Amino acid sequence: MDTISATGALTITPLTDHVGAEISGIDISRPQDATTVEVLNEAFNQYVALVFRDQDLTKQQQLDFAGHFGPLGVRRNAPKDIRAGKDATNGHVMLVTNIAEKIGGKEGSYGDGEMWFHADSCYYEIPNRATFLYSVELPTEGGNTRMNSMYAALQNVPSAILDRIEGRRVLQVHDHKRRERLDLDNIVVEDLRHCWQPIIVTHSKTGKRALYVNRLMSAQIEGLERAESDDILDQLFEITEQEKIFYEHEWRLGDLLMWDNHASIHMRTDFPRDQRRLLRRCTIGGDGPMSF
Ligand SMILES: [Fe+2]
Image (cartoon, rainbow, N blue to C red; front, side):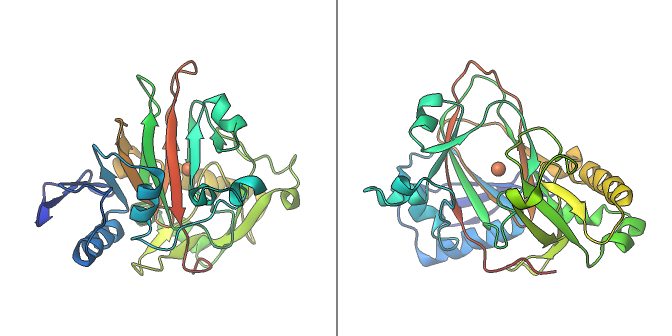
């Protein structure tokens, strides 16, 4: 964790033993040269999440920076008039906020208070590889983002559980909940966005294996009786949420936090409901279906 490496003016400082590094000495609003792009991609592959402080980004600059890591993701559920709107950035940018007028303008996704651990878009056949979140308005306290390495989580799974889950798939479901377990007895999975995904994935960029479950969206393990599936999932959620494998980001204005959805899960801590919180989000897509 003490290691600090640098290239030119750019410095990479690991934030924990397992996940996260802060990149300093770089203005990410500007075009980046090929060497810098390569260094940043290597750092992203290694550290799973990257933090850039004190940035000043327009929507377009955020998208240009994200594009250095892969093809931009499209807002799959954006209202039609947003996708076809005059501002070409709108199909890629979404606001994550508790400010009602922004949501009324169809610009984003509403979220107040705590949100449980999840991996963005894991319920699609090709989940977005990375999410880029830029802070615009923040509450005076809370609303932190916790981020866990799923490479590290897999290392902590006991062999008895590994034997039961190896080669199986898990059902990922988006039920629009923020802090509540999926209730399989009272939902119709076919009516919701859902996908069977490998429960252990091989990352397309690093070749490393990562656990791919999360408390908010993982519903059931393929081929196991419901009781055993529930029991194993509960144990896996405990393993994936251990404090020793997470980085907690305390937001400041002008932060850009990016994370790898194929190798991490993240959650939002609670924050006062009467305070405004607004972050601007974009994504890059995945290379293809997730691999075992
Ligand atoms: Fe998320």
